[in-house]
Length: 459
Image 1 (cartoon, one colour):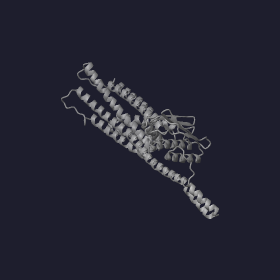
Image 2 (cartoon, helix red, strand yellow):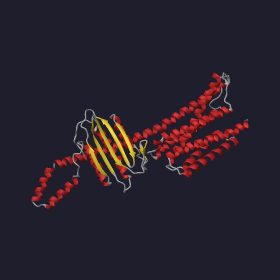
Image 3 (cartoon, helix red, strand yellow):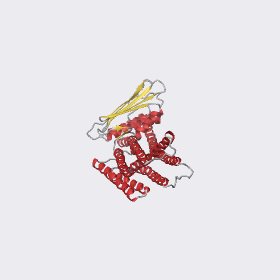
Image 4 (cartoon, helix red, strand yellow):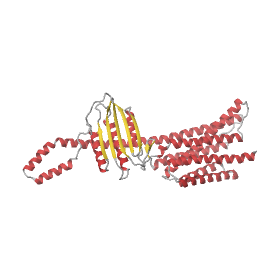
């Protein structure tokens, strides 16, 4: 029976580890990139390496802590070798997988062990219940199933963590996870060797087992909580810093645009005097002075689109974006009517429109030269709401899912839309995004303070 259990034990562990590798491959495939051939090589060599380390651990009675550390190092090396992407990002993916594998397995093993002991003691009235080899094997199977489910959950919900970050950020997040993982393994080794958890000598076997498993479970639970708070907290902090940095740069740009617009307004106001001066030079046939005067005006005046929306800062933004669209051969079609009683601060309105137009221009720029490029802006008052829709072309190969597109440059990935969503939420509005067949459409509905008026200020 003992030999059969040992034989079954290693087979069960091998099957469970194959399940973990399957989930790990799906996780890394989504966050990183890998060819089909390298994917199978990664799974095969990772399994072979784990099997050899496990056999060496059983045959030569290797210290468990050394087995765990060598196994972590080998798995990290396999991820670095076979998957594509920045080295720091691959380190983060591997560290997350190893951390989840270790912490989730120990937590559920401890939890199920406690439940089994309590059940045996209270329901079956066994004074000194203990975990046998078969019970331990069954608990390990259930714990490993939970590990696989946890990795699958990460695959679906942690995509944003791996987009739009710098290489330094990936390293800063991965390093504490690796340190936490090593510390936990050392703590487990110490506990299993009586360094941390010892019987006081006057307690029952049931009580000692219960306390030991509880301490394991609490340690694993606290470690999981700390790891989750750290990873998602760092992700949130990075996005907030990015948004704050972009806000500050937008403030400087909008102030500069408004100043330029004001200078243009003053110059247009003085145009009558310039015409009188030029007429005088023309009548006196002062051609040289007239040419110098015109050159001076040319350096001070920009061709302006006129009074577009009634808001100087917004007019300046639309003038600049329209010129960018013209330089990029983008068809520009705009019909915007801003209600007088919109109730939105000028800065927030500029952030909203500026980010929408920047995203639209970037999407058009990523298209091939032979593809049709266009931007259409429509906005008007609908009852007591302001309805704004920006529609633009995008590359046929691009997709939109989960708040981000699959564009190659992910450093600024999704920051513009996050700023847009922040503004819309601040004014209790609603936002809808649709993308498909080379067209990206974003619709925004913002309630006004009072009933919207019929404003005829169209671009």
